[in-house]
Amino acid sequence: MNITEEYNLWLQHTADNQELHQELVAMQNNKAQIEDAFYCELAFGTAGLRGVMGAGTNRMNSYIVARASQGVANYLKQKQTQPAVVIGYDSRNNSRKFAEITAEVFAANGIKVHIWPELMPVPTVSFATRYLKAAAGIMITASHNPAKYNGYKVYGADGCQITTEAANSILAEINKLDIFKDVKKADFQTALASQQISYIDDAVYNAFLKEVKQQSVLFGEEVQKDAAIVYTPLNGTGLKPVTQILAEAGYNNIKIVPEQKLPDGNFPTCPYPNPELAEALKLGIEYAKKNNADLLLATDPDCDRVGIAVRDEHDEYQILTGNQVGVLLLDYICSQRSKHHQLPEAAVMIKTVVTTAMAEQIAQSYGVRTINVLTGFKYIGEQIGLLEQKGKAGNYIFGFEESCGYLSGPYVRDKDGVNAAYLICEMYSYYSTQGVSILQKLAELYKKHGYSINLTCSYEFDGSTGLAKMQQIMNNLRQGVAELAGKKVISVLDYAGGINGLPAENMLQFTLEDKCSVIVRPSGTEPKLKTYIYAIGESKAQAEQIAEKLIASSKELLK
Image (cartoon, rainbow, N blue to C red; front, side, top):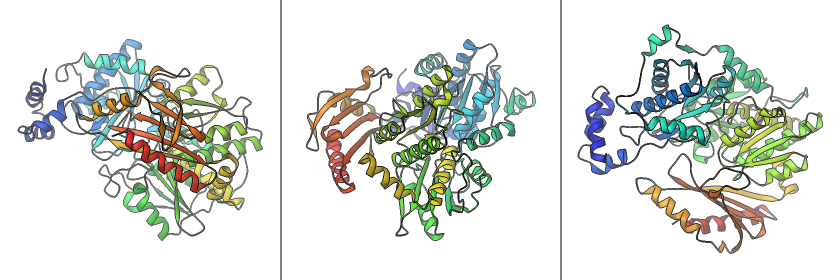
């Protein structure tokens, strides 16, 4: 079927959906719009679905969500006789609607549905899937993407994002379906009345918070908890769990950024609600300055990432990168566990390949083994699961990725912004009680392990030609690169063939002279090529200079 035929089919079958139908009618004489909406189907993979909301096969809409749910339902019924699912959703536009449509499809297929009664962070879906012994979990979210996006994230029974094998099997089921004829749907309220759909009880939420609290590594030590904290949920799901757990832990000097307090899928003050980015923290920093705060915390809309800024000796606010927060938390956890004889004999830290190499040095200094995995927290979750299968889940002490995702316990299998916010405040309070600032501690780690800079640069390739352009660039890079920023390329790792037992991934790692490196990979969720720059020097200034040259040199390669 060609694009025009597909468009006409949608025009014919969407009359009962006024909003989508009007959008289709409006693009009737715009070939470029029609092509962009229908030139492909929204890709389903280990991260589920993610895309711009709107009408068409290449968009997130109620028909795409319903068909995906039918595909997942068919897959689950092949695996279990009486499967159950957990469903959650964030603050994005249409998230609750998509969650209810998902529930209606599962209910119509005889699958028991447990759905959160209100918006919740993504880690609560991973947790509830395990806690309720469900066969799968579904989270409606597009994480930190701009407001026009939404997504459909799938977890397995282990609470981890689905494997490549499971994703391929689900996709095969989805592809069998006629989007307008083969999808079963029940009425949400009727299914709720018959208990085919049930709201998740508060006991599950409380059990989640209890697990987060147990991640404390104070082990009875008393610390000052009077730090002035400003928190912003960036109009997402973090407000309730983050403020509740901090208050229960004794952090009572907390102020919320008012414009970003309540859920709002339009993100009016933060067009790109990614706490990795300075623009996402801009309003929070302004509010922190007004209130003379010590620490700023920001969680993304689905509350699985945390960004922070800390006040320095000049009363300015420094934003810390995900790598910097990660090494600080890793060192804090290791040092506290060591001091209190709570470090497992075969302790394990897990990080992604693109995350700072400094973490491995810190882990090694405490006798902690590092496991490196591919980009994506699902691979960290997978490794926790493998440890659990061997009865060694307790050996896992921390995992993180450079994009502000952290987890310090095996109770969920995805990054957890509630856990991270809790530990960051505890770490801040601990060092403050010792008369040491976070920035001083970071400087101490650099002095001990070498000054390194990790930077991530993203380059967008939108539209129907974007994917082809990214593939062409990756192919060109595989032809060979002799040097970058005047530094000779010592070796190249091509992860497309699978390396060190890792699954295949379209990623290239260039190791350069002087322990520097550059990694290039297409994003798994957005039309972007990402470069990960690792520069090391004898001083901050030298490392920054090297990093700038590597960025400029890498950018030239991606044209």
